[in-house]
Length: 477
Image 1 (cartoon, rainbow, N blue to C red):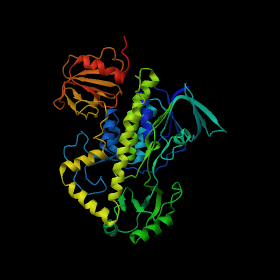
Image 2 (cartoon, one colour):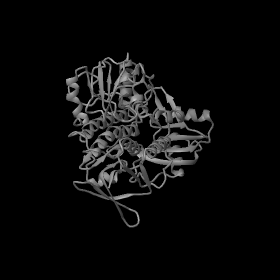
Image 3 (spheres, rainbow, N blue to C red):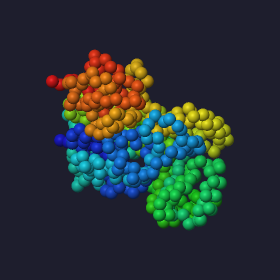
Image 4 (cartoon, helix red, strand yellow):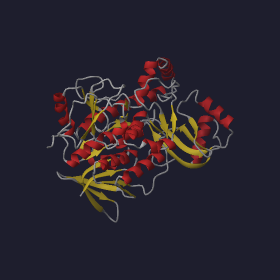
């Protein structure tokens, strides 16, 4: 029997596989596509996702293949300067194609010992008190068994459907076509067309990629019944002529796809031994570029908790805290994308509100507040009453002997002790104790969970001993 089967080899599933393998969990990733699609629908990693990569020692693999952007426009495309004093050591968006992100995450998962089985489609599942049995569409039906299963298989999740988990929300009211194609018109003509059309539609855009290829986005005339079927090149050209007055001479597409603005949130993220993460748990419009990032962050929250359950030391309720913590985060993202979608409307009322929001974003506090929402820097889990830092992730801080995130590579808990008087005896197999000091940390000591969120801060050993069992189980020895 396997420990965990992960369904879906996108960024969420691959991040989860790597996190599980850090803790020795036997994991198999099933992906129905025989080869990666080659489509980069997402093009950026926000600050919290960059922090996650840094926490696990992966950022140095990503940086040479991406580009740092510290420019505004991420909230509803409203032009605004990049805010000062963001609560992060990575105050930028890392522009990097989704295909590259998936490749690097897959390489990492395999290095750690995960198996990725492509061209393997899940068609059925059942569970009992001891594990989950899955049926695969291979050779007339093959069965596998694991202690747990996680559906990371996208917005049309087979796992979610088989579980019967409700997916309430709003259906798509608008559809957008997206493609990577070559453009034949001169750059100055292209820029003039884009500038003119965007006066009345913020949903239209043309972005240069590489090798003469451009990323072209145009609103569709209606909502298709099956968005799994992409538009043809001729349909794409026709729609460009209708909407922009010219087809820009587009040709030689790498790929063309369509997406809607449906907004839905799974009723629950866990059903027995089966869990949901990423787009299988939530879908929303791509405004602000949050979808891929939200999935990676789901996996980062879930990975250590599921590993603790598999390895037998999880305290009661730890695995359920995945839903308790991440469901509200997704609900907040759905709300901010709904708001952004309204601000992108061409209706006179919406355009008036957009102008007002643009004026408000001239205030540094407002601008920073909205960008921290998009970048997931303002997330705070409910750990009860306490200082403002409790429940928040701790940014990378400089220590006397290095950086905080350099100490988090193994995915364990961490007590950063500036007093030198505290102890994690009894939990040393799960929590590292580091005595060091930082001028950037205004607390005697902080206890970090494996995902970097502050579980406790103070200098009282008795308080620490009360908090350790909540997140790290019973003491040993």
